[in-house]
Structure formats: C-alpha cells, structure tokens
View 1 (cartoon, rainbow, N blue to C red):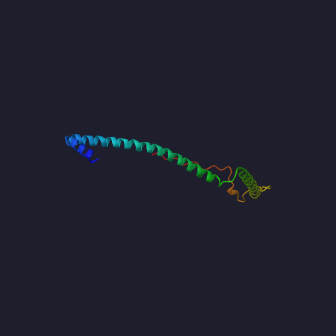
View 2: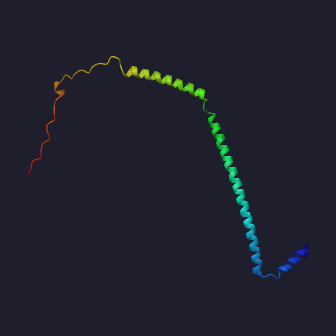
View 3: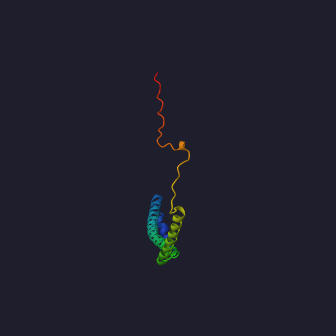
Length: 129
C-alpha cells in the first residue's frame, strides 16, 4: 500500500503546479456538481412530502372542526325553533306597536297654528343703482 502511494508521489513529482491545481479544481467542480444534483433531487422529494403533509394536516383540522358542529337534522330542528320564537316576537311587537283602534288626531286649538293656505312673502328685490 505504501509502495503504491510512493509511486503516485513519484509520478506526481513530474507534474507542474498549474497542472496539479487544474486537476484538483476540476475534481472539486465535479464533486460540487454531483452534490448540487443530489440536493436538488432531495429538495424536490422533500417538497412533495411537505405538500402531502400540509394537505393531510389541513384535512384533519377541518374534519376535527366539523365534528364540533351539530348534524344537519339537529340544525333543521334548531332553525324551526328559532322561526317559532321569531314568529312569537313578531306577534308581540305587532300587538304592542299597532293597536286595532287607531285614534284620529285632533285639530289644534289655536287657529293661528293651522295656516293651511298661507304662502310666504316674496323675496325682496335688489335696488338697482
């Protein structure tokens, strides 16, 4: 094993610094490209998982909230009871507000107050100078 590493160092000793840096940077670029592709695939796979988890959480939350509300038959019964109560309140209001024997309004006792045909005086005209 050590002999193999020694042989590699001997072979690399004939290489210039620029060539060695070029090879190292090219390998680093290839590694970073592969890493970027792996991260991209993981991001797409993770996004799908997040989207599915969010949809499931929303569905579960809606179903839990809907369990708090009464069922349709109970709602119909409650609406009928409210309509009966409103009908009774309308009947009471009608009885209190409007009486079946409406009374006529009496004329005012002061005749000066009853100026039915009076017309206001005309507006004074400007004097021409």
